[in-house]
Image (cartoon, rainbow, N blue to C red):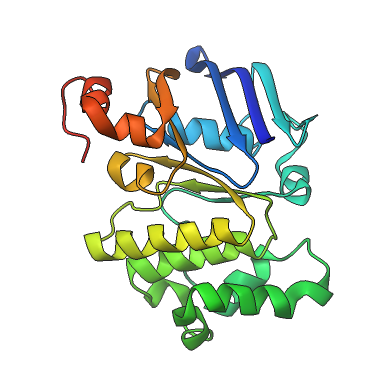
Amino acid sequence: MSILDVHNLHVSMGVQQILRGVELTVEENGIVAVLGANGVGKTTLMRAISNIYQIAEGEILFQGKDIANIGSDKVVMAGVCQAPEGRQIFSNMSVEENLILGAYHQDKKHFKDDLDYVFGLFPILEERLQQQAGAMSGGEQQMLCIGRALMGRPKLLLLDEPSLGLAPLVIKSIFDLIVKIREMGTSILIVEQNAKAALSVADYGYIMEGGTIIMEGPAAELIEGGRLEEAYMGGKAY
């Protein structure tokens, strides 16, 4: 059973068409990766799902209901939360204040349990609770970005380039934690340039080029047989 279905999605910025007929599905409790080089439309896709960008045509069905163009606040309240590209934490605020903002629409009675859940995944955030977020390392800021999204109690977590700018060991740690988040019952959609890292945890993958899906399949099949290299136009899928 699917939790997210995107049908014939078109997004334009002025006269420029960014997404062209994108189709994808995320299964309940699944991890799906959307892969592609920089500038192919991956972040636009995530922002369209979150209603940060309006769509020109198509459907975005979350648990069977069309959430396209209903407003980003209502998308979050429905259960779709995003950890955006570049982390975009509030660097002049404390770790605690960032986490509180992630839970702004939730019933306060859940706050302590949700905080304990985030600390269980990212113990460093509890240690740094009163620290200014901008003073943390890149990896710690990424953990805070994901933790802030989890404070919204998402049924579907959107992760936009979670490996961006991080060292290999930190990337491995982040992706190990992504698996744990899924094990706790959250469905996940990842967009990534780091194809092999994303496919190592995903069930299914889509490859984008020029604002459209050019290839899809089970993650294991995309990893094998040179299909990634083919999709990346002969380049190395790092």
